[in-house]
Length: 512
Image (cartoon, rainbow, N blue to C red):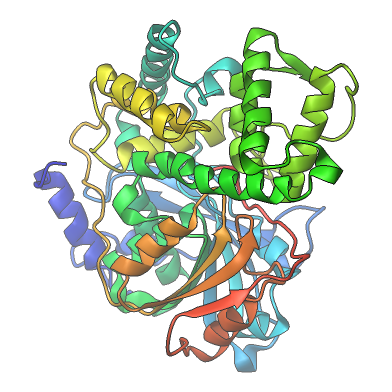
């Protein structure tokens, strides 16, 4: 990673840092080039006839390039669900569901039914579609359905084809978006958050971010520490691993989950008949993978290759019962005894709600994902042979998913055009981090990484907790998070609590 920044982005950092906590009504563009954005008055309206009347939407403008605030402007869709108890109101709780590429305008409505009443009395719940996403000047790369399939395992005979795919996606994105690509980043989304803060008339903001939203929140606290109030970061991204390392951590986290699943399943061989020992269960699984590589196994109307089985299993094994049932049905299907029933399939990218407006492009979720993860950092290797070597190495280390995680990605060919370096998160802002022990998307080690660099943070670890996304799911971590949001008091020390045996699973998004 290069240590210097280009002059325009030094200017961008200065402009963003100098946004006043509350822009004076008399401020001029000469005094503050961002005043035209900070003084906007949103035209709030009902989001949609099908949405509750209490959910309000508006569109504001933000600069595409913060170093040139008088240049091109883009839309930012925002929403809010106001507290009905003004006497207890503390401010706004800004929300992000994850992604990158996840839409957030529907989050106030969703979380209004999930969060405790004590939190909703304290805050207006405020959602937004991050720049490039949903209703916020959405990006598109014109990708076909096949090009959106990026889980590509390493194989010597297909690697050249996968390199061509990665190059094609990068070229399509640049052809569609051009220089706009380098401005769709986490740092600029954090700057947008600060514009939202000013537009809403708040000196500080509180925040609840899931998954990728934890990294976005951490970047905000780094850039705007004096405007960060109560921040809850749920299912955390490790800033030191942004972004290739966060894809690779799926493989690293998948192996201990697979081992745990094999041990659990072996102890229940009378039920699942997958093997009496963990080694026997592992052999049953990989025998199915080898069999499907020779001839795909038909299950639930889909023909699964061995690579499909490995890719699906990577996330499923975190829930041991689900995985045992799925592999059991797969075994029966391979033996010709079963071809029906519920099963695991690749989760499609969620379609953002339109709230009566034009729907975003079909590839918006994927396009926004690559735009952010490629433009956020300069540490993506540029040589395809590096990806080949890493994929071979990691398939040996992490046979379930290692080659998927480390093989070629479009970021190898991304045109960064001198964009900003990734933010180094290293601050003492008070935050609360929530983390399940068995999270398939942001494994425990990832949450520990964020906790390590956010020196003012406290962490709640849910032992035995399964799934991605905690707060609002009736977890044992909820009590601590609610106390922090309503009183501002972090626990004196890190907290561990035990998940209930029947605790439900919850997933905010299918990536980070």
